[in-house]
Image 1 (cartoon, protein in one colour):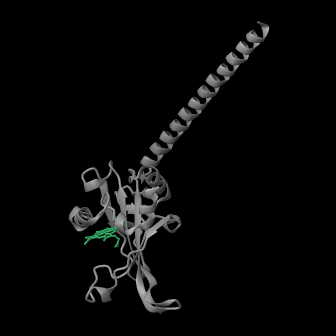
Image 2 (cartoon, helix red, strand yellow):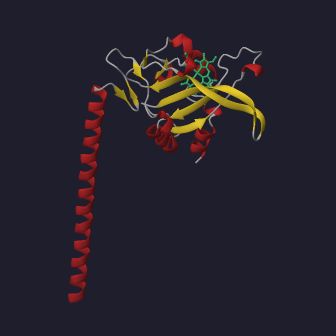
Image 3 (cartoon, protein in one colour):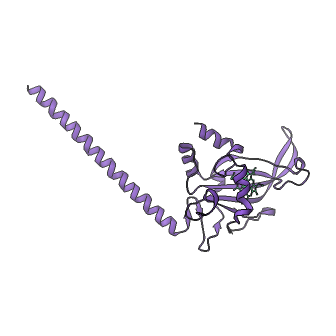
Length: 210
Ligand code: HEC
């Protein structure tokens, strides 16, 4: 009888601990959520959308540190395969911000706030140590896509497109959003997922296949 009672008591204690632990975990989560909301509010005030930052005139600031982001692919459309007149005769190095990449791995979708950078590099030469091919020369351009339901509510897929120029290696510090007709239609028509050319980005395809 005595034994049973103490068993009962320790079971109750364990149950108590479980409840306490759950409560503590829940309040920690709530605090963290509150913190995240606070950070998000401050970020919004500062013109931040995910990894993108906008000035008060609504121009996108040139993203910083994008070369530390996740590199997803490098299509190349050289002149000599396009009758000497390729629209973009360069290598296109494409990066996605790490936070959005992580969520893409988890959900297979581009979250609100996704930033994708396409940095152009000229085709520098065709002979390399490993054989003939196309080898990158110098950087000469940069374009960015930002997905934001608040800033680009009327744009297809909520994507805003930006061109930072960059011929000769000099990029603009900020860029205005392009007209919808300039960029979006080709992406809408030809890109595999949500206006993004995932069909050319093996890293994104592999992330989604997980
Ligand atoms: C004629 C079609 C076409 C037009 C017009 C076009 N793009 Fe793209 N864009 C592409 C293709 C194809 C890719 C895939 C990568 C590659 O091959 O360069 C791409 C990729 C991108 C990416 C990388 C993310 C993604 O969606 O895959 C950005 C950023 C981008 N384009 C910006 C722009 C901007 C800014 C404009 C307008 C000034 C523009 N694009 C107009 C065809 C187009």
